[in-house]
Length: 558
Ligand code: GLC
Image (cartoon, rainbow, N blue to C red; front, side, top):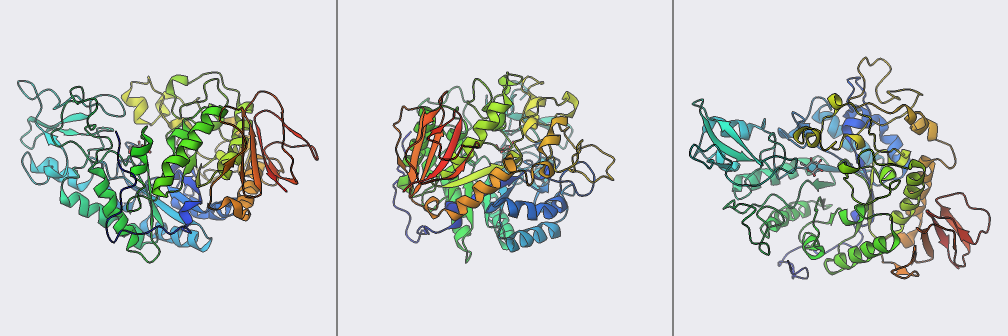
């Protein structure tokens, strides 16, 4: 489907500030449940993050993105929001969140909070009121309630499937005790979809944005950003025109939401950033979200899903830069997050593609190879034009944890698939900070409960304490690379020029006087002439003229 990405912005629409921080920031994703547990209940919390802020500042990142920290029954780890303006007690209080934002700012770290427009929790006051108010009430209009099909309404209103498996509809019991209407949930049953055709839904979410922006949040990450707009006729998916608009993904109407949000973001003296979770195969449709009066940036899932293969990475990088240029938006480079298999693990597998590869669970994995490639990939990501997202724990070289007992798994993907899909718990395991045995300093020594997911014993060699000060450790490598990226002005803004061809097994490009060479072949390759080595992903001999396989280097050219 084509969309005009060069559309002229509406009169009065903002013009781009090319110096804006989010254009080349390195943003660190804090998965709060698993960062640090200060109160000893086995779950990470705001107090834990506050004590970890000096660590994050010393790592050298520019901003922190927090997964949802709002009041939630945690049916989907907080993506089922019961109250968008309060902090879940398991994480702390609103006062602590405000203090955290101020303390982070004092350390030069910006804050991005997650907002979830597509759905809320079935415990949200609006949904409780809708259940109580019954069919035909204005309260039900805030969601998608419909009668069922079949002689007695016993069949779901249409054939849509939940992203987590099973039907996207659940039948409710009406106030009179009888089975009644069904409601739509594109994710878990505990996550009813909001009806964005209703002006109250729009006004409420704009107010939620202001609530967090007023508290100093520098931006928002927009969850499932392509999904809030639905075809109001709710047609069967099977009967939809293959070439026509999808009934709930990437409908043209969704853009109105983000134009309104952009206006809210621009109403602050220092405009706030909108960063979208936009999973779309079509590059033009993707770029449409980044028009000058919509979002500032969106995650690059094509890059995340690309295997460790030079021509394919080259093609994704070129396609990314090409798609972003007409809308003058910065590209983003991301390899891991809380939804996908950690890239140390993926890169150590025969099939290194696909961020989320449940069918690969237990596939043979060479972690040493994956780690080596992950180091090379860091130099590649940080040298590419745009902004970069890091997922907590990648700086420690953490891998996907597969040994999680079924009874401890929490992800709805696991439960709604009857265990066929192991889900995403393996990338969400609590961080190891210190000591030689679990909980590795994640929880205080006084804690009597175990961390909410079990940590592997091998992480003793991957704690912050074990890696700090060790010259070639993953952590010190990240610190050095991030410091150099800040210092290298050639890496801020501008584009790249390739030295390697599109089909080679080496990625070789220049940004100013910095040249980045990544060897994805199986053998050593010859390096170009250079003045000095700025940083390499593997120890290199003095004045070497070759680079080993699965390694990368930043060179200073003459
Ligand atoms: C996004 C989140 C994911 C969540 C889903 C539903 O994809 O990243 O963790 O389960 O939306 O909110």
